[in-house]
Image (tube, rainbow, N blue to C red; front, top):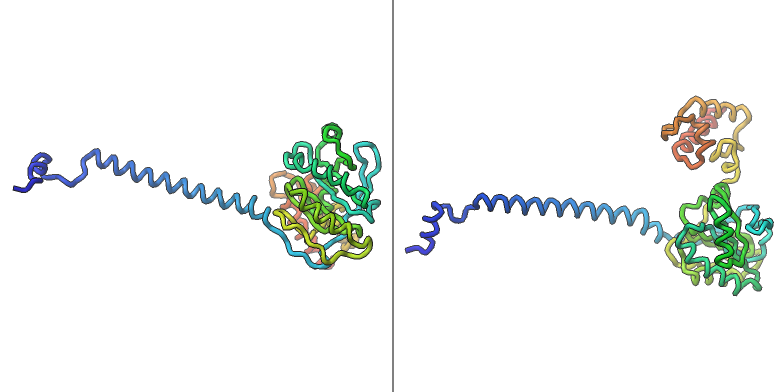
Length: 300
């Protein structure tokens, strides 16, 4: 007699087939697999976005070649002590120009190291300059005193940020040689030892000749190929457009065209108005540049 016969008899000969409860269990298992797959997709998508917008940009370090070191823009400010701060007057010195803000956590971590560097190298022709991007000077003055900052600090503005190619993250630190050229740019918190090594190299350079053998620190966020803003475009009556190639008639034609078109960014302004009130709008900037190119090609 087959030992399995009682079981077949007991369940009506349906042994081996799933019961109703088995169907529920099977559907529950499939549900778990589906949820797991969705979570896996979300995780992979999240890792992709983190890598694209955080890790990858931080790890980009551009190769250096001679001639990649532009002269630092001319800036004139008043520091927190009421003194004139002219970057041009620091030519002949090595300068660490630090863009920061009181609300920036990494900036707070980095500043004590800059204070120490100022103490260490000031007698060798070195200075740190701090440019705060706070909205008002009050917190900056308080922070300046609290952290015993021993170098000039001033509150900057959007124009200065644009002159230096746009400040997209804080801190952003530029290392400038005795010749007034920018040799390195660090975006994000950077170990002070990296900046100090670059400073030591530049302190040994000639005050007039470009240091072609400069070796930047290989830290995340370091760039040696510096792209600065165009002063003619930044100070233009149509912000972002260099109008120096246009005749007076072409300028008027451009203004007319930009007044007749509306920016699709959602501001409900004309292209001209959007450029004037929102310099950061990339949509109006792109469209305005296209209109300018049309006018230049048409020879109006």
